[in-house]
Image (cartoon, rainbow, N blue to C red; front, side, top):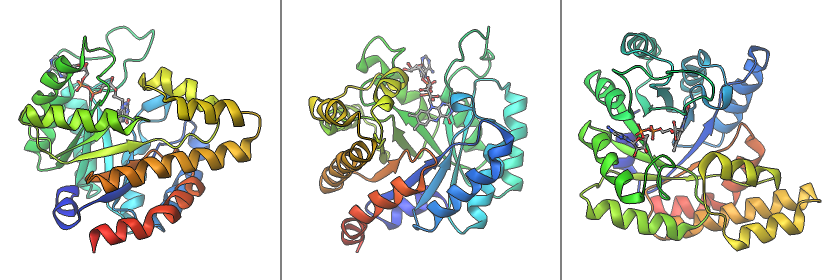
Length: 290
Ligand code: FAD
């Protein structure tokens, strides 16, 4: 089913994300993690593409396994590393595998690789247009705190309009740890005429080392409350995990209460974290959708 259709039927979606393994030997582990996530009946599961050095070839294959487990899949695709013809090849594999939803991304620019982008496929909006023309339900990324390469949030929102004009059906946010960042962003994009549904990306912090890694990756602002949790429990992994899950749960409940259209959990191939968060919010989500 397309994500647009699910958004028509439900007030709030719950989705998870998996990434393909870095080594082919771990392919089955990733499929098993995806299967466990499917058992929680999320509205969809997304599969990243080439992010963090993961193997790109497996994105379509894992998305197709997720479909075979009865869960809608969202396959990511990036401009980085692909010409238009190469992207079209992957798109035809997606069609063969009955994948209906694609997240169109520029991709992270890998360090030390000269010219990772072809001139013809240099921004997500170009890829989004190709995917729309092929009949896919297309998502795009957005950045409540601004994309790190933009001079300011306003410039980034102006650039976001290119994706909307290309026909993007929904947006998924970069992770953020302060909900007020999202609320002010939603206000700003709506006042610029952007009204597609926005799914909030939530990253549960389950070990204190993750924080510095996540800040480096996303430049996200870390509120004092989360920093205190990391400082206090960094030496106690079990306590840190429990506190991190509680922090993410608190964020999610506030977002749902404020009418956010979807919660996308960066589950990092850890079904147990998703299971615990799911247990904390399943009745709340059912109540909103009943
Ligand atoms: P774009 O929309 O192209 O934006 C990149 C920069 O260019 C921004 O500063 C923007 O303001 C500007 N810009 C946009 N359009 C134009 C234009 N037409 N002209 C001029 N400037 C423009 N990376 C991966 O490698 N694999 C993944 O699977 C992956 N999944 C992700 C999922 C989500 C939900 C998010 C939020 C990010 C994901 N990323 C992934 C990371 C993403 O690829 C990077 O953040 C990347 O730097 C930007 O991608 P984008 O699609 O937002 O690019």
